[in-house]
Each structure stands twice: as structure tokens, then as C-alpha cells.
Length: 255
Ligand SMILES: NC(=O)c1ccc[n+]([C@@H]2O[C@H](COP(=O)([O-])OP(=O)(O)OC[C@H]3O[C@@H](n4cnc5c(N)ncnc54)[C@H](OP(=O)(O)O)[C@@H]3O)[C@@H](O)[C@H]2O)c1
Image (cartoon, rainbow, N blue to C red; front, side, top):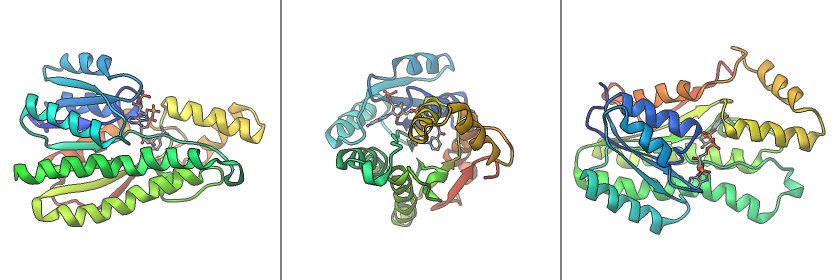
């Protein structure tokens, strides 16, 4: 088991990629804290216990530093330490710049970029005081590497995560805390379904056309499964990646 007795927090683990990462960590022996936004990720936490590890679930808005602090003190009360943080929670909007409202822009930037800052700041303080090293994994996107029309807020927020990852990795290196980013391409989750629906609506074309165009642009000609992202997250959370920090790694079928 590669994460035996580690304590990991995964934001946005009620579904999709975050949930797959939570299950993969539990399979490797970690005790896993999962968070949901609209409700606590209770179903995920219950399923995690079937792996023979402990789990806690919280309702968390990553834009709210008070909620983050409260969650962390409850995690420390229960588990006494934090070894791994996965900043996975995310939101998106598909809109033309000239039509996007200021609040839509702020929402995406706040959840995706500020949320990573707030959670990393709070957990890094704990990791430094523990003096046991640690792993922070930020879920960005291939949208953070290349800009696309209608995705300005999402691409900007995801690129901000990549810059932040490099900065934080240097700051935390003296404490043996590794900070890396994963850039998934298209992954079969609720987010992708919703994204395809909104792009089709914006372009006034059938959803099937948008889906086909996306598939054609991927050399492996298939979308990733959430588990494809989870296996890289396990590697980055484990001792196998101890000499890797400040990196951005794509899981995108060759795109
Ligand atoms: N799917 C893709 O194709 C893809 C590609 C590249 C990158 N990503 C990134 O991967 C991550 C996970 O994506 P996914 O596809 O699994 O998304 P998803 O199915 O839409 O799940 C998003 C998760 O984030 C939570 N969340 C939303 N707003 C939040 C907030 N303000 N505070 C805390 N949690 C919040 C949601 O909670 P609720 O369930 O309670 O709403 C849910 O658990 C995101 O950062 C996304 O940008 C996804």
C-alpha cells in the first residue's frame, strides 16, 4: 500500500474526478477527508470506509477561509495530522467575453484560483508545523495550457493554478512539501456533460457534434475516465514522487 496511514484531504470529492481520487487513495491505505459543495460528501465517505480506512466528510465552499479553518481543526482533532491535500474543487463557465458578467468571471476565478490559494495556505501552515513533509496536488486543466474561445474565465483560472503551483513549490521545498499540478484533458464527468451542452447551445449546433469534435482532437480518440487522473494523483501523493515538485503533468490522451 503506497499511502498507508496517510491523511488526505480532497476538495470537491462528492463526484467525478475528486471522488475517484478519494477511492484510489483509500485503496492505497490513506484515511480520506472528502468535501462537497452543495452538501457534505457523505455517500463518498461511506463508500470509502469499505476500503478499511477512516473517512470524514464536510460541506465546504473553497472560497470561504473560515469554513476551511473550521474543517482543518476538525480534521486535526480526529486524525492529528494532514499529509496530503488535493485541490480538486472546480467550476466553469462557457461564455463569450463580451457577454460574460463580472460576477460570472469572479465566480470561476474565486472557486478555481482563490480556492486553491486559501486551501493550500491553511494546509501548508499545518504541514510546516508538523515537520513531516507533505504533498499538495492541484487539479488544473489542459485549458490552463492553451486558451480557447468561450473559455476565457476557466482558462485564466486554470493557468493561475499553474503559476501558483510553481511559486508554492519553491516556497515549500525547504519543508519537504511537494507541490505539483495535474492537467486533465476531457474527462467523462458531470462537468464534461454540462460543458458540451453549454457549448452546443452557444454555437447552436447539436451536442453530438461538439462531442465528436472533441473526440477527434484527442490522439487516443477517447475521453479520460476519472480513474486515469486518480492514478497519477496516487503517484504524486506517494513517496515514489519525492523528487518531483513544481511540475505540471498532462493526462490528456496525447492532446
Ligand atoms: N471533467 C473534465 O473534463 C475536466 C478536465 C480538466 C480539468 N477538470 C478539473 O477537475 C476538477 C474536477 O472536475 P470534475 O469533472 O470532477 O467536476 P464535477 O463533476 O463538476 O465536480 C466538481 C466538484 O467540485 C465541487 N465544487 C464546486 N464548487 C465548489 C466550491 N465553491 N467549493 C467547494 N467545492 C466545490 C462540487 O461539489 P458539489 O457536488 O456539491 O456541487 C464537486 O464535488 C475541477 O477542478 C475541474 O476543473 C475537469
